[in-house]
Image 1 (spheres, rainbow, N blue to C red):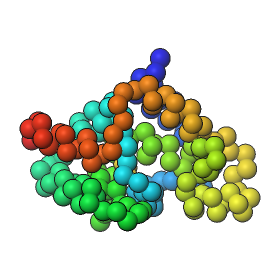
Image 2 (cartoon, rainbow, N blue to C red):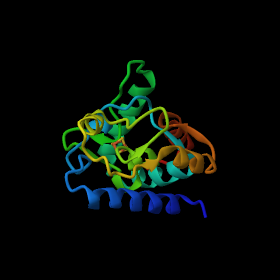
Image 3 (cartoon, helix red, strand yellow):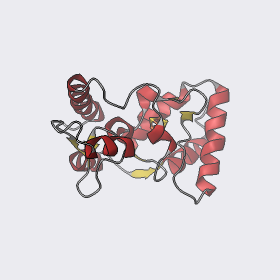
Length: 169
Ligand code: SF4
C-alpha cells in the first residue's frame, strides 16, 4: 500500500526509532532552523497539498491572510535561502504542523544519496563522531513513493490555484 497515511506512518516509525535511541537529537520543538533556511520553495504532490489545504482552511482569517501575503512575496523573491511562509516567525513554530508536507517530516532524519544530511547542525555533530550507530531513513525511497502520488507543484502555485478557485474562506 502506498498512501500518504502509510508514508507518514513509515516515516514516523523511523523518526521515533532514531529519537528513542538518541535522547540528545537536535530536531525538537523550538528548533526551526530548517524552516528558516529552505533552499527552494517547497514542492508538494497533490495529496500533500490536499492535506495542507485542510490545515490552512482551519486557520483563523488573520494568520491565513499573513500566509497569503508571504506566499505572494515569495513568488517574487529570487534570493535563496527562503523562510517558509507557513512558519509562525515569532513563535518559531509551524502553523500547520499536523498537515505539513513529507519533506518537513523527513528533514534531519533521512539522507539522500549524494546530497547528504541537509541540516548543517546535524552534519557538524556527525563529522565530530556523534551518532555513528544511527540508521538513517532513505530519502530516495521516499521520493520514489511520492512520485506515485500525483502531480507535483510549488506551494506558491497550489496556493494561487486555491485562491483563484474561490474555495478559500
Ligand atoms: S511547512 Fe511547517 S515544518 Fe515545513 S518548513 Fe514550513 S514551517 Fe517548517
